[in-house]
Amino acid sequence: MAPKAIRPELSEGRGGVGPLIPPLAESQRPLRQQVFELVRAAGLMPRVQVAKDLGVSPASVTTIASELIEAGLIEEVSAPRDSEAGRGRPAVALGVRAEAYLVAGMKLSDREHTAVIVDFAGKLIADDVIPRHPGPMSLPDILEAIETLLHRVCAKAGVERSQLSALGVGVPGFVDSAEGMVFWSSVLAERSVPLAAAATARLGLPAYVDNDANLVALAELWFGAGRGLSDFAVVTIEHGVGMGFVMNHRIYRGAQRVGMELGHMKVQLDGALCRCGQRGCLEAYIADYALAREASTALNWGHKESQPINVLLESLYDHAKAGNATAKSIFRRAGRYLAVGLSNVVNLFDPSLIILSGERMRYDYLYAAETLAEMDNLSINTGRPRPPIEIHAWGDLLWAHGAAALALSEVSEAILSSQSRDIAAQ
Image (cartoon, rainbow, N blue to C red; front, side, top):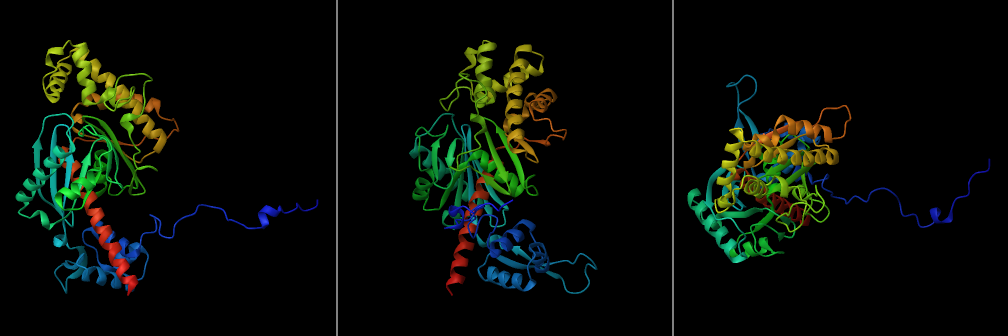
């Protein structure tokens, strides 16, 4: 058989094939950053162990550690040896210099605003909470609330605002974290609000903003169950329904950075009205206001609509626990819709863990055995077990911790990038 002729277009002007990966992609972080992040994650780690874990020479780690120590980011700490404790000189480990920087994290919600201050090692210094009346706020009002809460938490911590290096802010809704833009949020009366820039200008402090569910996932990644996992999902159920997804140890946001909006996945064409303005969203069937809407109609509780929503929901839960069939059916219906949402998370992303978080996790009807069984039925049957589900009914301080982690991440990356540029210029 004669050989096939080579097509001219393949032999001339070859353009190459395969993915075009930038020289320093996310998976190829500078060694200096890898050393710092490994030490920060470990708490304390000897140089030799850092070199072993990163697969580099001890000499490289020694050089980089010296640079990070000189920059004031890490320090040497005496640590007892694993064996022969108390004999000989103590081992020297590397640790983050906790007092190097302070950051604040804040969650703005429909019910309350919460804030924390943490040091550079992530240790909590102070926290505070300000209750509020539900409903959207104007930008000037929300900036006033941010400044008031920041002033209070700084006073508790005994620090001046000028001592903070950054502020992270979490809000519900559609947020582009890279641009600091809030396209829509239930806590803001306006759309397309440059909240990060506005807060930075108001406070004289670098401010960063993100979707609050992303920040819960970030809190789990930095401080909680997700620290050792490369891929996991956090589904939050409170005033709304959100989802944060960690992929390869990083928050995944999508191409336009506003993805993972599980609460606005459509589960019913022309269905119930969602507060985003569309119909049939998952949130419109399982969030606080959805349960309250069902209760007002099915239980003839129109006279209770003036009550705070958390009071109404507690009453609904008490009726369900007491055996009221209508109240139980409301939670059961919400659980079935939650099963639809969770099964889609499993089918789309195959996470190693799903964490259900938020104050509504107190309502066990939302994750009852029949809800999880329905989720199993709706998930792809591969013969393998579904990912485990954990219930974390943390309060809003966890969300604020996630916002603080966002601020810590931004501060450390900015400093390390600046240091790398300075060294390269020498």
